[in-house]
Length: 208
Image (cartoon, rainbow, N blue to C red; front, side, top):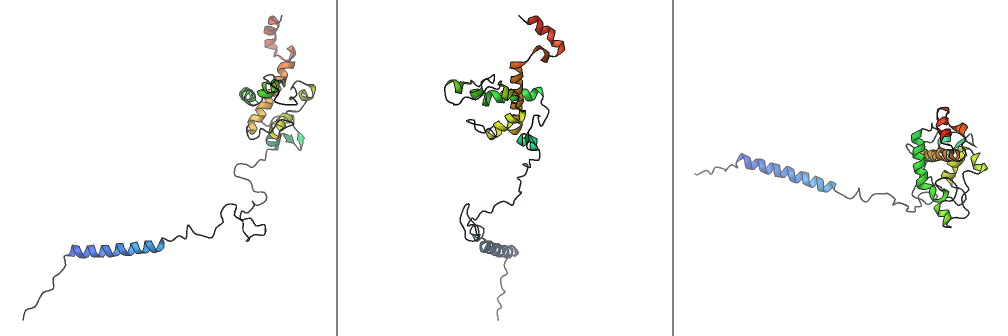
């Protein structure tokens, strides 16, 4: 009687079969998990109406008192130009020569078309008849006596035919422009007594 010995598979082929089986099992698991639950889910599209809430809106209003990060405006003088509800006649930060130079540069960009480089209210826009009534001169008695916070408020909120510049000029630059307006007013109404004593002699020698 002849016995047929079972042919054994090489060990490396058995390993390949096992690895293939594991790979197929993992692939099947992944395919079973790849559903559209992350794409088709219970959510609202932006501005979509809903009957879930009484007001019919899917967007929920912010909780009262919510403040965006970095926008907590506790310095009322800086952001409103007022102290205890009264228009302030002081600056929220010390004005340096660099601040005045920045105010001059911003004034020349945004204000001179209507107010002129000297603040006379006769800028090129006014001369060409595009604004009526013309802005007042900064050198009239009313504006000479106006607190500095007034100019900040006008730039922030607009006044008459002038619209708000709050979206165009930063809070700090509005104060710098207000400081430069004060410098313009002084330049048109200064006297020799306003000049520092060490420099008066030089100016007096140049006087006609």
